Length: 572
Image 1 (tube, rainbow, N blue to C red):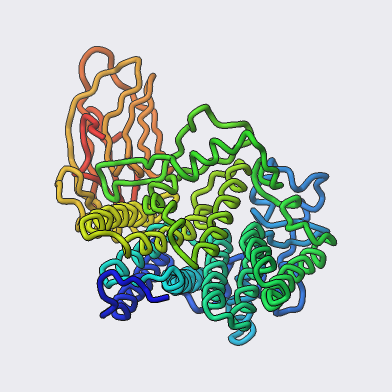
Image 2 (tube, rainbow, N blue to C red):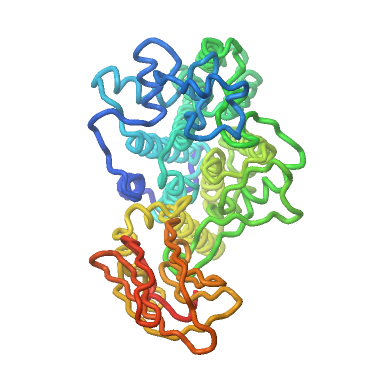
């Protein structure tokens, strides 16, 4: 089939290389933005490094001894057990610790690095590698699928599609905080994207080696996130119907990877289908996966449609915990999040999958996987923003191919209109994702690297009233009266990390910042006003309060970011 060209392919490679460098540079920056540099020295506390040490030593349990007090309990898995007695979110079975997160990242990166260097691998570097590798595979898969659809892209369209794949799918948020959860999800993203790339190659060329690699990668995704095996299962069914025995090169490595995961589970828990969640040392309602129909509607609302929290202060968009229409069921785990359609508005082009030619079968399989994963996650009652990376990148990938196919056959007027709409959705989605990448789950950059946050915020805050500054000097004198109600005397900081000076009845002066409160009893005379003098010294990071000329409170705040600079009475 001769491709229907829109634009020109001249410069396509240059565009690809440019966006690859851009995505690589941003991902590398983002994974360290909250202050965690790549540390190549010493032993590290990450769970995947614990697992790598176990694998190199020839066993599956972690080389950490559970506390005797924990082992002596009748029910050590109870969520009421104090956190200091347990390795949180680890698995306790037969008096040993395991992790329930899949071993895929440990086998791929951590254990080989440990075996060769005798050192631990920085977890943030591993997540960076897997996320960038996942983008690279998905970008190459997109190119193959567009070619299968019988069309080609010009440099402008390719630029937009590659940017959408890199920035409109939840990965910037995932990179902000690096822990065991994010690494497992990043590993799943890598293996699924790699599997789709080799599948697209095999679909186009019929080469058995590519089919085998597709089976291996999609099988390996199970070792990161078990439910991601749905995609490999759907592909296997399609290949058996289409190729019969010629699907064996895919089936063998896919089945082998699944059997290895079952064997790993049996070696740990004497049950091939036990992943450890029944023995999890976690919080309430987190010890097992029990999908419920009542969770589906609120789950879909949170994972897809939940509106972002908006602010006049950089980065303007943050995750927020809203109440779903109709309420939230009991035993529901809700973290602040933004719905996927706000992060990937590009997904409105999903229906264009119908015109993608030879690529349509693969894309329909991907869509079926996306729908299945979305319904599964929604039904669990765990609305967690990092889970969106399980399905959003694939939805964007399908949309990219659909848009390329649609633009190829359009008259110039409609082509320009659709391209403008496409550019708008990419810019909007990128802005939301980059803002969430700065804010993260709990404003890690603001908390851990306030100087970096303030510097970046200055670049993007043209309105002085809402421009954050670092440790602004402050001095104010005002009068207060004794009242029966709570009085906010001073408000500073930024909305997500505020400072408050409050007078609580009958006579408590409370200075609050970053979870560190300073409370002192004070005497306020009835009737006449009392002079209140407040000052903050940037050099010492200390806030002092005097009442009626007498020293009342000294609170060592440390480093504070505030919008100009503090306000009385409060305005935000």
